[in-house]
Image (cartoon, rainbow, N blue to C red; front, side, top):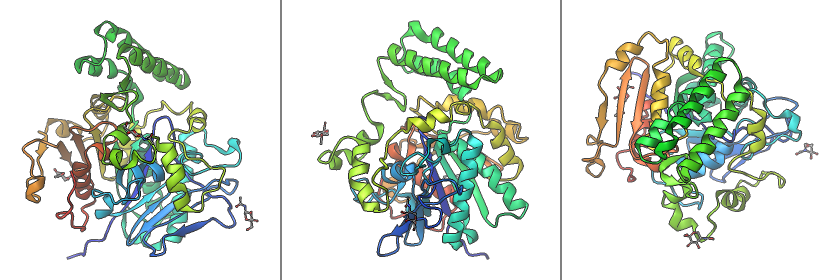
Length: 443
Ligand SMILES: *[C@@H]1O[C@H](CO)[C@@H](O)[C@H](O)[C@H]1NC(C)=O
Ligand SMILES: *[C@@H]1O[C@H](CO)[C@@H](O)[C@H](O)[C@H]1NC(C)=O
Ligand SMILES: *[C@@H]1O[C@H](CO)[C@@H](O)[C@H](O)[C@H]1NC(C)=O
């Protein structure tokens, strides 16, 4: 019987109006450091020689994470071992796997490029840089090659995870890369913008957040987005989509696009966790906390690099690719035999679960019809310790062959923030981790 090997999870928690990336300050001498006990390591990688940006890596005991906006956000705000206040996060995914956070594309989070001209203009360039970061990580963490690597991407990071997965699996097959790709996980992923744009009107009307008089206008703009995309007019489609969000904003009196139960001024990350109580003394602003608390902790971040929740310049540069779908990449992953897991939060607006269901139905994967015919399994987690056994359904799951879909109830765009325990159980199931999470107390 083979012994189970601890998995590694590469997190690309990138957001729509941002991209997270990392490259390195000095290609000749990238800066790497860590905690004295060696449990965490971080640094910059230089995926292109001309880049003077940075990439981060953080390693924890036998668990590892790397740095990026994923570093700031995915790590400190969502799944890392510490809250932004440096207190332990009970539901950290570190219970299940070492974690590597990467800020990509360059320019997001703590990653930087000295010249604006070095920012990526296409998803393909972003993925090529990520491949360079993985090569650097393999040099620094040779154990990466003997453990299954899972790519987890949230939001725009979901698109990068799918694209990177295809490139990695091809490189593995043609022998240019020695690695085991465990699977690709796409959380509230920006995979098919047209399907999202076509879903906003009905979703928000059904949950009473959109003025009934505005539904047909919102739907019409969704159709325009779809037509412009079909005609290859991606920049025009992005403009229409932005106008559509503005209309939704005015006709919903400011619904929060990450969670339709919230309003625009409510920060879904800060307001929904323990964080609120503990951080209120510090600041109520994520950028401020990360720059004042986390940046000094990391030591190696150049003074001039300021962490921002959304790096508009990176988003601007990607404008011609921003709306391009990645449904074909998901198909290719399945054709290559890579495990794919898609999850979506119930309350998400920007990437609505019904939009995600819509693109899944467009897959050319030959298991699709059987998958769609299967029942969903409700998850109460009653097979775990009693306090986690819930009368309430926490999530639904449906799986067939290498494709799994989780519907996470009670969660918005940032699933692990809103539903930490179901998210932890999900990642443990995906990675088949030997880590024991029965004693973990979190909800
Ligand atoms: C790059 O490395 C050289 C030599 O080690 C050093 O003098 C220079 O300050 C470094 N530049 C940056 C941006 O770190
Ligand atoms: C943050 O918000 C809370 C609740 O609204 C408030 O009590 C606290 O004083 C705020 N903290 C700062 C530093 O502004
Ligand atoms: C775990 O994953 C398998 C395969 O994807 C799926 O069939 C099963 O329902 C999942 N179970 C839970 C509890 O998530």
